[in-house]
Length: 299
Image 1 (cartoon, helix red, strand yellow):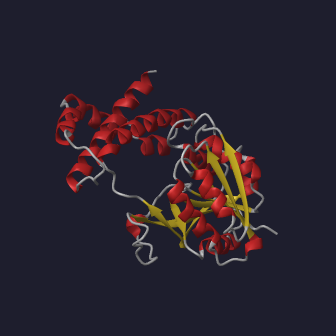
Image 2: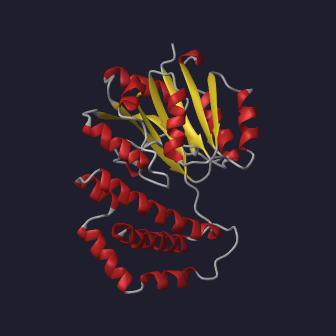
Image 3: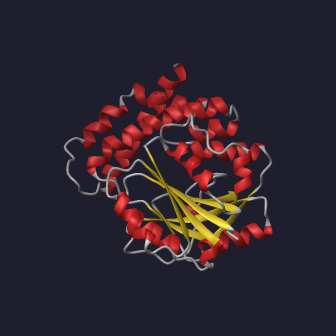
């Protein structure tokens, strides 16, 4: 009997995916008790080669779905169709689960069979220099359902219709699921021993404009989220509330974006951003997010 499915989606992360799949196969539970379901969402790099190499190392059932690029929500649903475990454990393609990962999700679920189980994630900048697997409060996420490390009975997420495929751009598709599960009365428990490493390298200069573009896309999906969930939780999470909108409106009036771009001007190449430059890049992306929010709210 397959008790759990690790489900993940990937897009153009071939080198990282090989490490992630290796960790998924290196679990302490018997191989016949779980499976890995991977959706390749239209990758154009060497992801196909990484998948074929992984097939030879798989110690459990390994199911691969290949499709044209169509966004994470649709890819998640394509994966859900192929899942057969009693409980589906969602991770991302930049997450390395520890060997006790599946076992701890199942242990927590044995105590609360109908509940969402939220695991701990330790952010790391270097996969070749991992810290001790000790979770701390600095890595805590208060999200009810966060696909970096979360599990739920397969029947439960299918019953609410899976992921909303209208979230075609970056962001909020998992928060939407969490809000619907909460509204359906599904409880959530936190399992700090269900640990994974979350790869979060420091951005490089060449990635600044991509950060800004992603922030704008996230703003557009934030508006979609609050229109589906006109609830204080969604308004607070997305920043669509008078306090945050007013504050960032004042910053736009002071032309903060121009000053931030001035600080970042001239940064090129593949080098990691300094602490100061990273702070400015994140502030610039934040300004782009709130500016795009206002445009999306007016549309």
